[in-house]
Length: 290
Image 1 (cartoon, rainbow, N blue to C red):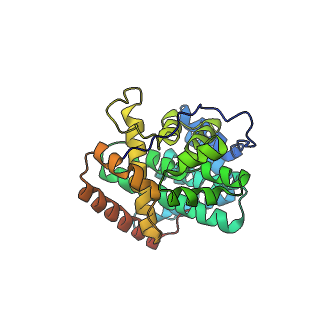
Image 2: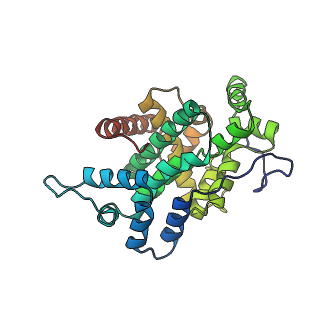
């Protein structure tokens, strides 16, 4: 059964109290560097200025180094080893939460799931043709970034999500009815405001559009549809890996997303389980970026 998402504008309602958070300075510099012909020394200099990011990048670079390899201590060596896009993902996982001042327990729960979804998206990208692994990682990390902003401004937001589940409808539909916007729209605006790549912005913005995986979506690039479809697999696998309840949105869009990617229902479930197991292995070997 189709549950259409309202046709909403790509701007916030005039009467909203929402204010888009500024992009953390280190991420703004990295996004700018990535979108032009970046200099590895410039990227290394940016991460070196942030001890938490620099430490995580060095740990990750050393964890993937060959056995017996001399320990890397220089940020430039680490950037060269990992690649700029991998470094960008690490930096985002560390710096982005600071832009959304949620209560500590709420923030930890949300960003733990987001980091796990990002790793799951990376694993999905290894298994099917489509976006590069690091692009999938960024999408998984930010696909729900509109949620913390809505939480900050609407104290009843979590209740709205629960009400949507109880009413057997997509949360975006009830969010729009109550707030005049929804988390996918807000996430698209945040990522655009932060000057992220257009493909990522549009995939986040349109991920819950009921017609996204239909036959009459010629105006939406296949790469955007593929990234959005992969996101549903990643979200389901991440929740599985963490022992959480299934993502309600899998009920609404999971089968359509699977069909778009060429999977039968049984194959889709097997892919989710396979990715969840891979994510658990990664979580067992190393901590996902704090």
